[in-house]
Image (cartoon, rainbow, N blue to C red; front, side, top):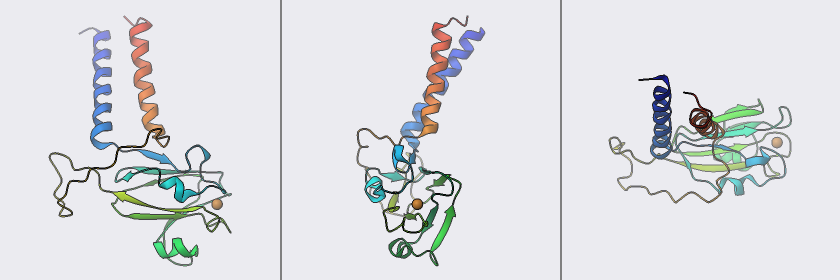
Length: 181
Ligand SMILES: [Cu+2]
C-alpha cells in the first residue's frame, strides 16, 4: 500500500472512531456559563438547566484566577453559601475541569464574598450514561432511560471534541486537495 492510501485509510478510521465515540459514549464537556465563563452577574442555575449532563461529561470553569473560585459542595452548603462545612472539593486555577464521574447531584458555588448569593452557584443532576448493548445491569432501574434530545445550539460542546474534528477534517482536506501523492 502506498503512503497516500495508508494515510487516507488511517484518517478514515479516525473519522469513524470519532463517530462511534460521539454516538456511543457521547461524552461532552461544558464550559460553565458558555462564552461568558464563570463570572459574577450570570444566573448559573438557569445556565445549568439548558443541558442534560451524563456520567463521563465534564465541566470547565473558566475565569481569571483570583477573581473567583470553585467549590463543589453538598446541598445544604449550596443553600447556605457557608463553606465552613460540606465541601467536597475546591479549585482555584482559573481553568478548572470537574469530571462528572458519578450519577449523582453535584452542587457548585463560588466562595468569593457575595458571589454565591449573587448567583454564582448551581446544582446539576448527572444521569447515568445510556446503557451499552453489551454492558448495563448495574442493579439500578430496570427501565431504559431515553434522554431528551439535545437542545438546538448546544454551545457547551466540547472544545477538545471540536479540536479533534478540526484536525481530522483539516488533514482530510490537506491529503485530498493539496496533493500529497
Ligand atoms: Cu465568584
